Image (tube, rainbow, N blue to C red; front, top):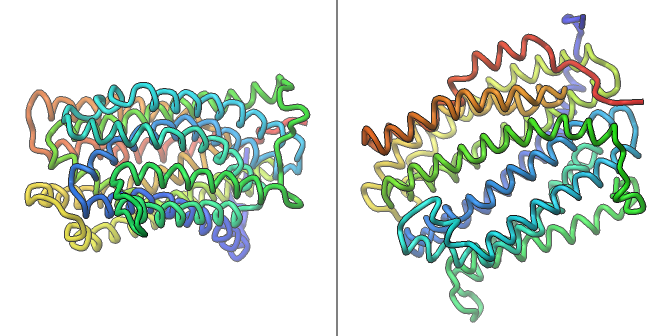
Length: 453
């Protein structure tokens, strides 16, 4: 039984939290800024360009779900082994991550190059959007080939006390991406105006720069690097532990990623105006979620470090405190969304109908943010930090696939509900599962040391 009265040094706790969360939040913000930059720049050209790129980008979103499961498993075990000061095992985890992420990246690259039209048909039947999106995917597919390797390097940096350099790398790549977006999309400095193709080219060049920075910075002293001398060696016990964490994360990522993509597809099939409004709302959502993403990642590292070091009581106390903080972040995010709504509605060129949809979506999203923040920090941070990864998959299967998606499908294609009613259905899962999440949290199954001697 773990002592529930363990006292936390608040000064040390918040210093550690801010040291981890701020760079990771900035990293998340900068990554979301790429999508925002695409939307704003392409939105100044034509609604169709913006919408097509937003829909095509869902392919990378799905790829990131696979990559996130692999790097997430590496982060869970890596944080605990870092708390235990076992660098050799972290190197072997690095090797495992690179092998799996490499395979995933090759699969998505091949699909984008050979079947871009079929991929776009998943999200829309509009011929113009399919043509623009297919052109985008053929160029952006090369970035999907690179990003898996970069994510492995950035994950290991985070769990090995090199969070600021990882944030610097991502931030630099995003700045490069945004600058190149402007150059290629609008045809600056005498270059041809490429529009959607320019956004794809900018993304690919930025990913190349990101990988070069990862390799260069990781070559420095005190950085964990892959152990290429034993790259294909198989540590059975470690592989089993990795699979035990990765498979539930993969299931949860697929449930969540395909579910979110389904939301986009459902709303996209309700008309070009609905798809355009949803595209803008998604960019705002991703920007606002950066704060809870940073806290969630920091929570997983902090809790994992304590549990891996054998300090179970302190790990539990950290988890409880971080769960409470998630509610504060949630209500703060709600307020931010409501404050930004008038500004966002006026920033992009939309039809009157799309603008009306966007206003309603922003108000609905404000409520959704409470559940999103609480669940991100509690599930993806605290519970995952202790290896309780199965719960996320269960909760998504029930709340998203058992309730939200069927309701949205019925509302859109059977009962023909208004667009905003269908959009509200896509936001039900996060808010609705909060009581279940809190019940699971209080069972404290996540308070355990995952490391081996």
